[in-house]
Structure formats: C-alpha cells, structure tokens
Length: 241
Image 1 (tube, helix red, strand yellow):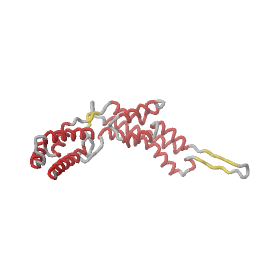
Image 2 (image 1 turned 60 degrees about the vertical axis):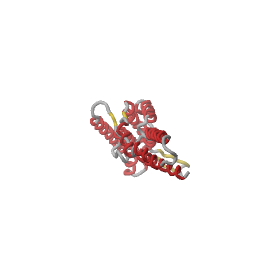
Image 3 (image 1 turned 90 degrees about the horizontal axis):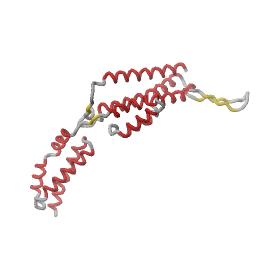
Image 4 (image 1 turned 135 degrees about the horizontal axis):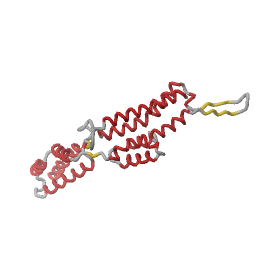
C-alpha cells in the first residue's frame, strides 16, 4: 500500500513539474496536453506491477522531461493570426463615435468578441471613454461650460458658479488634457497589444503574431500625428474658453 502511494506521488510530482512548465502556454492547449500525458502514463502503468517504482521512473523517462515536452509543444503551436476585425477595432473605438456612434458600437463588438485582448483591456476600451473622441468632445463641452445658479432676491441674492471654467487655468488645462488624452491612450494600448501581444516570462516582448501585407509603420505614424492634432485642437479650444 505504501509502495503504491509512493508511485502516485512520483506521478503527481511529474505532472506538477509539467504544469509549471506549461504556464506560458495557451491554457486550453496546456490542459489538453496534460490530459494526453496522463493518458500515456495510465496506459504505460498497465504493463507494470503494482508498486514498481523503478519501472514507473523508466516510463516517465521514456515519455520525456517536462521541460523538453513543453519546448516541443511550443515549437508546434501555431502563431496567432490577427484578423481584419482585430486590426480595425482600435480605430473603431477611437473614431467610430463620429459616425453617429455606430462605428464605436462595431468596435465594441470586435473588442469583446475577440480573444486578442484580456478582460481589463476590454473594460478600458469600453469605459475610457464611451463614443471615443466624439464622446470626449461632449464630455469636454459638458465639463468646460460654466453654469450659474442663484437663489434669493436682491440684495441678498446668492449665486453659485458651477463648471470647470471656475477652476484655475492650469487645473483646467490639466483636466482638458486628461479628458482628451485618455481615449487616445486607450486606442494605443489596444493597438500595442494587437501588435505585440502580452508579455510573459518566456517571451518578454509578447506572443508571436502573423501579419499579412506590408509594414504598418507609416500607418502608425499617421495615427500618432492625427492623435496629436486632435489633442492640440482641444487644448487650443480650452485656452479660448
């Protein structure tokens, strides 16, 4: 009974090392791979005597060390392909609101239906800010307008000024910068994940990506210029208010 327990511990230790080595692999692929190895071990144990610890270790040696198995799996795992919808999603998120909000909704669908982005980036693209730059425009107008509410009658009338216009000019500038820069940052964040993927211990620069067509360096440059133009435009409007 004790020998059988020791055999189980050997297998558990082997599978534990295998799962540790699979941490940088796609979770679905890792789960299927562990199940396959467990099946090989179960089939191999049928020819061993109960408690044959030496034979069990030889079986595991024939299957291979966990690190070697994982490296072979990584070599055969296909690279992630970026779809046309994935490439268009960051653009829809930032500029889609201009098309009566329909484009932003399309971008939102592409964001949540894609496996490219993780949950926190999907939440970022959804709430910072709804409508993209168009939503930023309305938010900017709402925050920059100054409303005055008065109560009582003269000469004891009391008036309260509301809105960003009552704040000091440097603070207005900072708030305007944050309001405009936030959706631009969100779109760049989504585009960065799209281009490089998520970093991990084995691939600090991100997962492999297959792209079709020419380099998109010039497109990114145009994107940066457009974003800066929009940013400076809103800052200029704020200085005039």
